[in-house]
Image 1: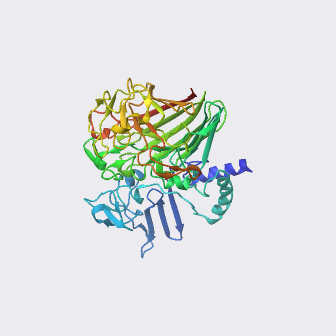
Image 2: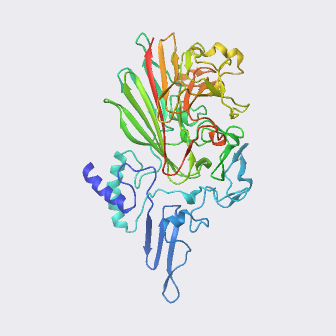
Image 3: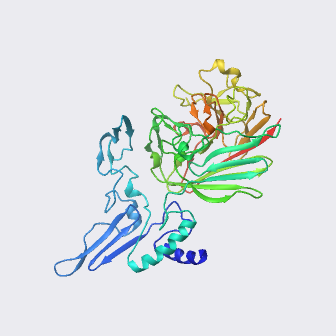
Length: 496
């Protein structure tokens, strides 16, 4: 039955302008004509536009009474909203902001200081999913019955496929190492490895349900982007254009904005839970103007187990049409004693960075790169996380410049050792920096009802330098059209 259904559904989806079986989260753009008597209408799922509407005059002569264009490309470049479906809110919103239930929401201004027709990436500038298309009722009914069965098997919403992917949990296993992931935010949910006595334990903080990840403000195990860490003033200038982002950390943008990569559903491209290299591939298409960032960006994240208790994370991105900053990271919270074992202050850490980037009171880099010698930030030799806490205000939240880092070169960033369990984690990367964060303000109910408190975990986020877009002396994060970005991380787990 599946083979027969595939042939019918493939033909149907080709007619409707969709990508066949499996369905891309980015729908194909098509033109759809409806006819009844002397009335005919042409529409496109790009912006749900009316392209033409033809009716007869008093002499019976047919004529198109709607202004528009000849090509989809022209609709993409249109600023007049010819025939468009406009939203989320049509017309103007003054000051590009409003207050609802006591919360101030700041929008993207695209009409002076105001927001017009939903912003620069409103409903008229996105590709809509075609749920049903019935130019001839008999054909439509026949095709629907076959396609509905097939798409149910593949786990998608029927007819045309939803642009909203189903959320799932994906487990990779190899020997004593197992990892659970979800395509919601491409999160690591758990990572289980043995201690020195062979006892298995989960060393990643997190939650029990996807709903909790949706409501999470700590980015537990998340893939963060389009630009991780902070962007000062929620804006930057690139090639002479000022881009205004959505502020979600005071006046600054943090981790890509309130709807960054950790808050979207990624497409599962491949999933191989077993074998020599168990892996899963997540993909996401970030559209031009999303959270204020320029250009369309295709991103993928690959989680892979490599044997000998090693895991790699590969993050790639390609800019399709505009120069844009890219800084993708993984935001796992690590506690090698176990996610529910208390604080990490006694864990021993070595960071292979002899310089760091100082920050101001808002945790924005000053632009300087200074030595760690003689400061609480010196972890060139192994010492416990909490050994210099008395000289700090709250804990660590700082970027290190990794010694010897170079593009495309894998360099050791840090080693962590929990003496009680014996677990050791070594992290290497091809990125120039690593953010050391000791979960200073954490107070969250997590897995199994355990309450995570301040310093319950440490984060080692390999990355480009924070706020690089506003500091020309920092390593560039700009990816030009046609260029590719790659961030590679290697995690090695062992025991002492």
